[in-house]
Amino acid sequence: MELAQMATQAMWSKDSYLKQLPHFTGDMIKRCSEKNVETVFDIMELEDEDRTKLLQLTDAEMADVARFCNRYPNIELSYEVVGKDSLHSGSPVNVNVSLEREDDVTGPVIAPFFPQKREEGWWVVIGDPKTNSLLSIKRLTLQQKANVKLDFVAPSPGHHAYTLYFMSDAYLGCDQEYKFSIDVGDYESA
Image 1 (cartoon, rainbow, N blue to C red):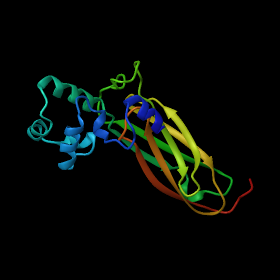
Image 2 (image 1 turned 60 degrees about the vertical axis):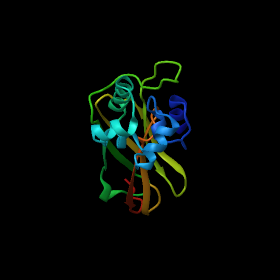
Image 3 (image 1 turned 90 degrees about the horizontal axis):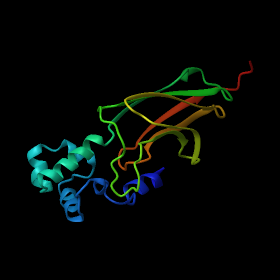
Image 4 (image 1 turned 45 degrees about the vertical axis):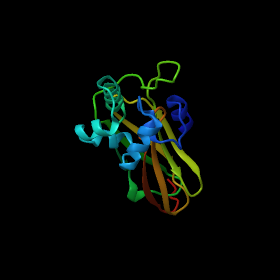
């Protein structure tokens, strides 16, 4: 998933997320870093006057930056473990995930070094960080809203901690993760 992000944006995951922005040079990224501006969201939150002073771009270049920022995904995620209080070993665990894009802008990914037009895709994943295992995964495209159901089989009885990951296949710095846990009761026969 991270490889897809890096290939699309022509950068390494260790690079500053600001490197994705048009016209951002190493010097500009360093200048931003000194002002604790590290992410695309930080650029968007700056006051217009502060942004202009910090970036020192022409109006046309600033319009390119604005276009990228407006297209950069800002997505609200909520989730619910269905029947969380009555889970038993061997029974299905259903997790409902709701996604909503905060803006109305859609279209292809802004990736000037990618050789062709590319649509934005997303992965919703449930994993167990302790055992480094993947329990459930879904791939989706997201215009404005989406609901996704992930499921897996409840493990042995006890308390289990998991992480829900929401990952872009095109942009770096907009992935989200949420920790949640379930308590599983003893196996119950039907």
